[in-house]
Length: 256
Image (cartoon, rainbow, N blue to C red; front, side, top):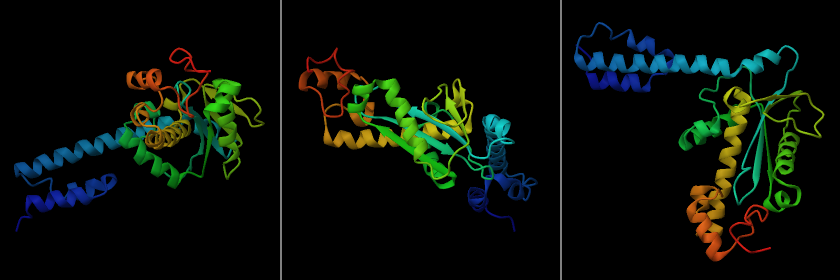
């Protein structure tokens, strides 16, 4: 007796896409159009997975390049240089060499839903994760570039495993006695930097959502502190909040 197409669909849905061929092979001789469509669908899914694994492999090219000499390779990135409000956040991540994490990429190229999913995967599988947060008051005191460096140094200091190589997104961090490799557009070229980019982005976005409840009207939950029309309108009409960067908002308020 032939298995119902609905049952075959459930079987495919519950199967591990990495080993989907084991299930597909059972039904390749089935000529029913519904089964043929299901097989075609999952063949495409398998092809997508294979392409992602190839891309993921390329994203670890820097990690492989230095793996012979270094054993704790750490990716570093930051988020929040440009907003009018909120902190700058940096993250340092040491990825495992024996666990696969797919879909890592520059956080700006990843949907919010996917970033949230990847955040959980990274936090679960990473060898170590460190996060550095520098508030607006310090940004105003030492400028955004120095505040970014400080956030990165804090992130490194919070790692439970000390790295012996840093892969940085385009910068060389002063005051750090660890070999550094700055990589232009590193968050799109290095899995470790991409992971740091995603964790930093999710961490800061969650902070700005919390700030939105404390300081309603500026749209922090949606604009994350950047200069949206809603944000600037409220800033001009109501004034600043304790999380605004005073060195950034001079064009929108007369406050000192």
